[in-house]
Length: 236
Image (cartoon, rainbow, N blue to C red):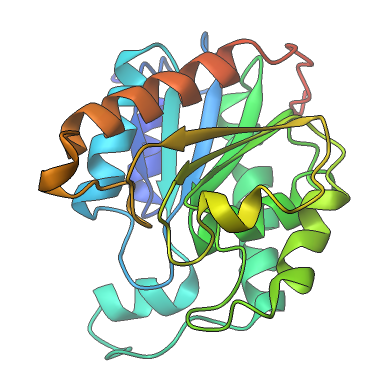
């Protein structure tokens, strides 16, 4: 009789999984990073696909999911509807973490995401018992509203778990000139991508390459997650 793997079960739930997954009921042997998409692109965007592949190749399993509005778009029911309201996004995060923890029982579980997905992860990391949190292109303020930094920074200032932000130096939602003026906790590390935009992509004239930036970002993320304490906060 064929035993369903945890990875296959994840796909059946509408998730995407990169990494080793044994039979259901057997704890995952490597750390798990749950990664959420940004506001405008789905979980299988080129950016998300590349990061998930590179992080998993570095030894950290990656699970991706979609918020309800994006899942509706995928099913052809949502058109170009905007993101769900914050309570829905946070509830989806909480439910996904609980289900993934029960399914994979990883030795270490980190959460994170691209832009909006990372911001929501920062907000809920402590509540869901994550061992660490990662943000790829953190939106320090809404588009074209640099004066509204305080609200977006509050979750970072109150962050009680280790955190890593990977940010482009010229990110229009929070470049280095702005972020260097902010007071952020010592538990939060920031890796700067030279000349990177909100997708960590540098200009051709900069001499840097987007592929190199993504490789460096993924390596830093995998290294960060791998170094987190193995708390084993999974359901028995």
